[in-house]
Amino acid sequence: MIVPLDEGIREFVHDGDTVALEGFTHLIPVAAGHEIIRQGLRDLTLVRMTPDIVYDQMIGAGCARKLIFSWGGNPGVGSLHRFRDAIQNGWPRPLEIEEHSHAGMANRYVAGASGVPFAVLRGYTGTDLIAQTSQIATVTCPFTGEEITAVPALNPDVAIVHAQRADRSGNVQLWGITGVQKEVVLAAERALVTVEEIVDNLDPVPGQVLLPSRVVSAVAEVPGGARPSYAHGYYARSNPAYQDWDAIGRDREEFQRWLRTEVYGTARTTREG
Amino acid sequence: MTTLQYTADEMMTVTAARSLTTDMACFVGIGLPSTAANVAVRTHAPGLWMIYESGTLGTNPDSLPLSIGDGILAETADTVVSVPEVFNYWLQPGRIDVGFLGAAQIDRYANINTTVIGGDYSDPKVRLPGAGGAPEIAANCKEVIVIVRQSARTFVDSVDFVTSVGHGKGAGDRERLGLTGRGPTRVITDLGVLEPDPSTRELTLVSVHPGVTVDEVRAATGWDLRVAAEPETTDEPGEKELSVLRSLTSS
Image (cartoon, rainbow over all chains, first blue to last red; front, top):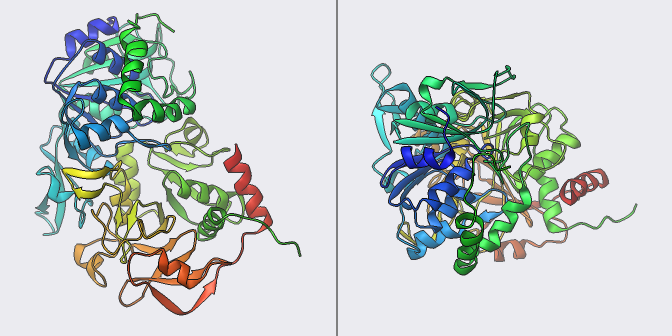
């Protein structure tokens, strides 16, 4: 099903949902995040391995009640100041957090995609992360007796990812750094995908991930929808935008000015470039 | 012989680069570790197999990436794998020789904090980005090298939060926890080089950078620092190393 982005968000994302926007530095669904802000969604449990500036924006706009994550920073630049303000000062509202390592989060999605209740890994042992959440435990291997770390499956209500292309039947193709997108789409109840373009035929690309339309709830064509992150083969990461975010995110008033001009002031249509 | 001018940061980065050899597989963190690994591959270690946690294996970027997932890393990689694969198939079984990590706080047993500083976890004074790949890099690489600027604020007697385990509370702790890698084998700072004592695992100053005194290193350490009987003086950066480093960081 091909839908305009605003319709897709309206239909598939609801107040109180557990929502995972994934994309590991590459193909971050930024336009979808901004549409969630514009629609004023509230009480979301936001899930993402690397909440970067789009989650900083969603947290600052008051969409989130809880964040499940493994690294919350502005890559190569520093801290996320809206995220910090929410945790340290409860602004604009308190933010509950559940914190993992990357290996733990990746395995939680793998278990979710696999239809099993938990995953095992060699991780977290000896760290203070274990004491902060009930979502990290140990299990004894029934074959060797070894004690090993277990993390529960993560099955979001809705996964949102960005990809390079889809065909008119809603099959989705992405390539380059593909992160955990296959896992999050297969783990989620519903999946919304934004794409750079909709094409007649998906020509094979080396290293591609193909998401068959039967696991994709809807596709929205949003050229540039990953900016300021990037879409391999389409446009490069805007490193200056990430650097500039530091000053905007640092100040509440500056951030609110940014929200007014860059998000609320720009209703995005499907063909915007 | 001309005297080369260089900064303390350049000294640190070049020393870190020299810890890598051409036959190693290295799990590279962003920032100082990435700069050092990219100097190594352009000088004495052309075969260094660099891995970034975004799933880019055997990458060889022609400029320094700002993030662990810049496009240049994917374009120049031997192969790009998913994030579950990089952690489960490559890192977890101990296929990576050396993990290169940074730290916001580090203690006398090289335990690393990148999570919270001050207060308690739920109400911290400073909230940092968190764990990312570091806990499992520290656990599962064959060895770990830490690169961090040294000050009494960063080198603390006891970290506020153990994000990644170094040598725990001392000798035998890694084995007791079942951690497969050897843990931190070197900590390279802008003042010198520290290594865990072979029997106690406590960090010991083994080398000071040229122009730095042992007392200066002690003053930049938040505990009573152990010092080797005769600490060495680190070799100065060479001309080639400096020019490579500067061409990377100026672009």
